[in-house]
Image (cartoon, rainbow, N blue to C red; front, top):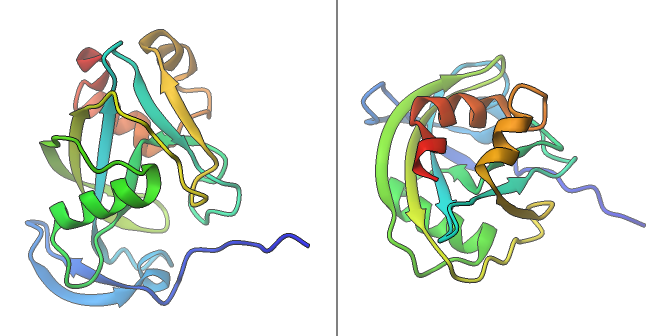
Length: 173
C-alpha cells in the first residue's frame, strides 16, 4: 500500500515585512490557506558547464503546483533560520549538493491565490553529482531550447516562468 505524502502543515515559518524583517510566525498551513501572510523562501538555479539548467519535477502529492517542473531548489526558511542557512539546507535535502558557490541575484515578492512569498533568488554553476531526494519526483538538466519550447504550455510552474523572465535566467545559460 502506498503512503500518501504531504507537506507538514504544522511546520512553523517566519512571517516577514516587505524588507524581510521577521514580524511574527505562523504554521505552513496558515501561510498557504489564502491568508497572504508573507513568508520567506529560497530558490537556487543550478547551471552546469554545458549551459543547461537543472529543474526539479514537483510530485503529484504537493499542495502547490503538483506535477510541474520548477526551480532546482526551492524551500521555506524555517523559524529561527537565516536565508543562507535555508539555502544550504534545502540544497542538501533536495539535491544532495554541498559544494557550490551561490550568488544572490535578487529578492522579490510573489503572491498567488493561496500564499505570499518573499523569494530570495540565488544562482550557481555546478558540475557535481545531483541526487534528487524522495521529496521530489526527480529532475534533470534542460537546454535553453527545451525551456523556450515549453514556456507558456503548463509544463513549468508560473513562479518559475515569471522568475526566469525577471532575472533574465535564459541569458545566463
